[in-house]
Image (tube, rainbow, N blue to C red; front, side):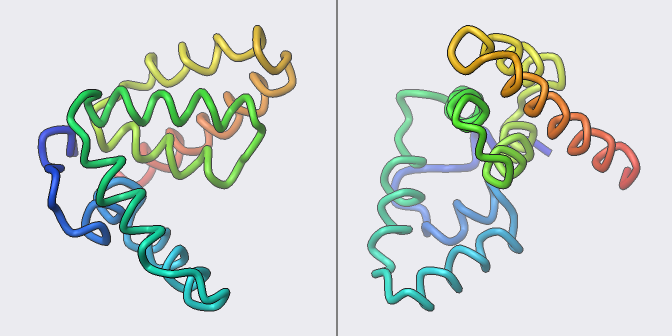
Length: 129
């Protein structure tokens, strides 16, 4: 399923979040923000303004997120954005290639961890098809 052409400026931020990271992750975001009394304006900005911009494709935007999260060693978010990258049309080879660039910026351990997470995502995706 590719969503690259489905997101437009002005789309509902919750719907954009669900398209990219899924219903479960979106629900978690809203629960966390509600629990800590973080204004909805934050999620509205991220998914209503940033992710709805059309300078980069959703595929490109998600591959950038994969790179950043991999080098920062943020496993939970990396998993979500690998899924989002695939939903936006990225291939297994593209995700792996982005992760293979990360030893230059964060060392080999972040590359190995990133590839491990990506393998789990792709294995789970393959087994659910």
